[in-house]
Length: 270
Image (cartoon, rainbow, N blue to C red):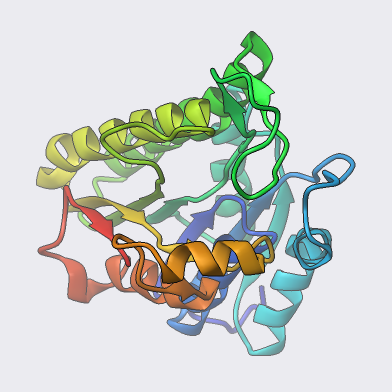
């Protein structure tokens, strides 16, 4: 970060190498926030992923950071495996070393693995399903439930230590009250994230911290196909195929001073 750059806040955004995470990092930086872009290099791309999706992921957090810096903002990219319980502390240490004290946390990263109890090997969009196993469950819950919980806890500890009075936490969720058929472990892990975020809102509100969760609409991060668009067009529940930037605008608002009275909400975008 340039020595003469003054930032109003410092944020950690997980999963910031593509999609909603990358757009959120850019939106926060545009508002004057320095951003640590946490990411993890995926393995070999799934054959079910579109070329656009693979290209988006491959672009990496370094490209996101470069774009922020070109516009005069402050950002660093840090590769971290959120399945490691020690990752939360390392991310906060890195942010404090390079950017300053963290007062915004966006839990966006996903360990998404499509799995199911059903015998079908593919879902309605043609994506390969795996059976629910310890491996699929562990991947989902480590990234989508454990990591957000530990990051929130680390955020709170450091907030208390410096007697701070302003903070913002935003999580990303999916699924619904009837679970998430065909992505069952993903939906269950996101339900855990929602519970942690709501509890944080009530426990930490007296310390000036708001905590909310955003439920995006179908969002074109590169995986949306014609069949997905047809599904949205015919659905009574889904109104838009959104861009990552559309969702990021909402997240950035929840991280602003204007959202001081908004906490303990799951914000459904349609």
